[in-house]
Image (tube, helix red, strand yellow):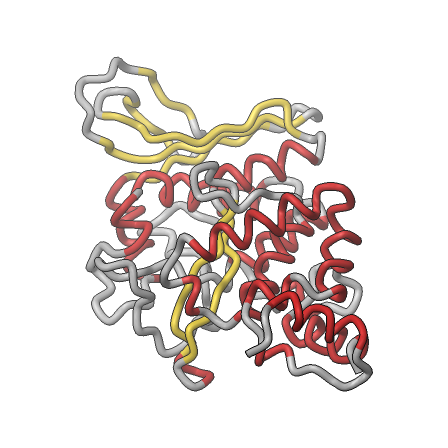
Length: 305
């Protein structure tokens, strides 16, 4: 049986066409084609990034079962955005899920963390301040959603009653958004693709507050913030990400990982959140630097045939 090193050597020297679907993630990532693609994006940081991808896959039993090309495609999105995928950092993740629409395959999907949203916003140079946080009981009094004015109070307990997002731009524009815990829960249930939408699963179960903060940031920046091309690509990619894994860490059985109203705004009487027009993932745009899995496959086949 050929080793990963031998496979890599054959890919670099043999003129015969190699099917990337037959290779494991390590052998596929070590091919000259994939190495060059990551170097084009990350320059000197490519080696460290690809090593982090392999370490991530090796230490995640569910991700290691995912289609290798889907892992590389998701990793390439993170690389293009120059965001680390270390779980402990919280900037971006590679999330495994079952794609029932395509033969029940286990695949990987790029997902942006709330710290990733903040990082991309700060890179625009348009924000003086930006923050989002939990709001504890007693901290906000008399919130007026029309004027966005409220009276500050003192924290009474560790009970989270809502989530607040705020930013101030260099041109003086300011925005404050507050979602109550009930509004956030209504939003979560509405867009939960699991069999039981009300059940807390996956990252929502493990870190509800982080996901709620991300939701506030994404909607606030999407409607009132300045979105750079980089942020638009990140948001488009993140809008197609499945967000739920079952209690054992397995991807939830979802019938379709993308819906026509994915992450659209909740009704005004439920959640004060912006309307988001459904967009095609930026990876599919011809002028996008983020490459789709089909484009990576085509490039791989062209260079190894």
